[in-house]
Length: 178
Image 1 (spheres, rainbow, N blue to C red):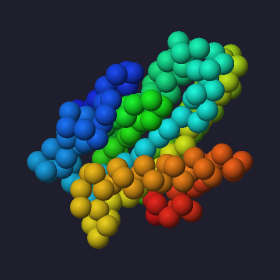
Image 2 (cartoon, one colour):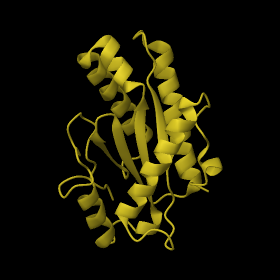
Image 3 (spheres, helix red, strand yellow):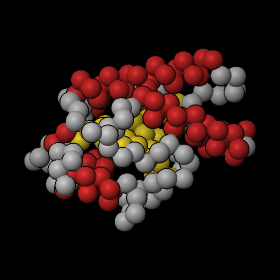
Image 4 (cartoon, one colour):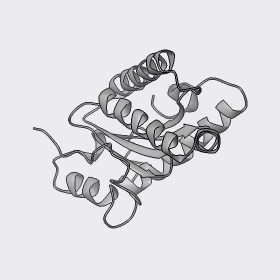
């Protein structure tokens, strides 16, 4: 079965936590049992240094960076996964029917694709990102909103870790995807 995607353009899913964003359709899919909540694992992703790209190269180039990242994110995911832009430089991907192995492989694929894109693009900057990944746990999560809130917190933890000069903190080390 092919589940709906919410696209990778710059506009869909703005305010994804709101009534017409990503949260409502995702909750609808889980409530209709098209996606069991137990197999739904969100990634929240934020571009690192996005403000500097806009400030140095202009907003048009910032838009190109967002588009390039969104295309790589969509490419790294499966057709059954749902992806959308939360706003600014933040995206969310809901990986469906997954386990820790699939989640780790997806993140590794995205990292490799972004590294290759950065090596071959002559932009004057690299597109880098921080990610928060959460695995559903019935004792802690009563729905999509709780999953997304924890993914958001995990993403900010990883962003701080990277800002301190560390590489992307592995999800298992972060205590998230086990």
